[in-house]
Image 1 (tube, protein in one colour):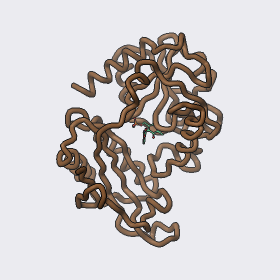
Image 2 (cartoon, rainbow, N blue to C red):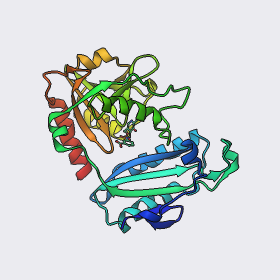
Image 3 (cartoon, helix red, strand yellow):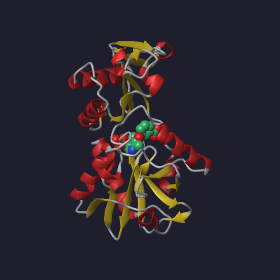
Image 4 (spheres, rainbow, N blue to C red):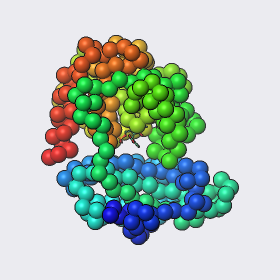
Length: 284
Ligand SMILES: Cc1ncc(COP(=O)(O)O)c(CNc2cccc(C(=O)O)c2)c1O
């Protein structure tokens, strides 16, 4: 049975529990990372751990072990579960405490590591591309709870995800408070127009996606012109190609947005080229 790591010990799935007084549960007061391993190697583990530490610092949370120890926890949890190609969920909560909000009245932040087999979208979603809608729920305002923090507060994303599901879509696009394109509920968005690759800049109020970063690197190395900039729904509608990026999804094409076909409604050549290269570097 899968072994779950909780603060120094391993537990069977049915015994892997935390206190109902944990502020991670009570208030979503905590941070997390979602990563993938390919043939036993976690893709960009250091970057994920850097982001986890940045998220923790942003919410004034001290992670009780070092980055190096955290890396060892991740690799050991994969190993004892015999998972080489899988998904890793790493969580640090504020810990258990009073029913009040005050983080000072909690103790013992919980470090949790769950490794599991990757649950992927069906292959036809990659072959045919997704249809998505623009949700009316905008992305968290950067001055409220910054979307740069990968926190346990995912209701903003879930509210938009519900709108997508209600519209028969598996993903939904969120705009920011200025009405510019931000990202989808669980992945970043890229557009291609006349051979140029564009993606919302970090100051659009988005998660600094690890896969987003990898795709920007791949595109630059391939000599593709790249721009991180403010984008609007109009830019999406008139794009030649659209795709999403995320650790779980990797690179997934989008062929329809708000009932507008993108390009000729089929998966585009640059999307395919970047996907092919991404698979090479994650599986080499
Ligand atoms: C809001 C958001 N934006 C972008 C990404 C992609 O980031 P990375 O390239 O670093 O993975 C994410 C992370 N994606 C994420 C997180 C939690 C759950 C799920 C899910 O699809 O069930 C997806 C995310 O939650």
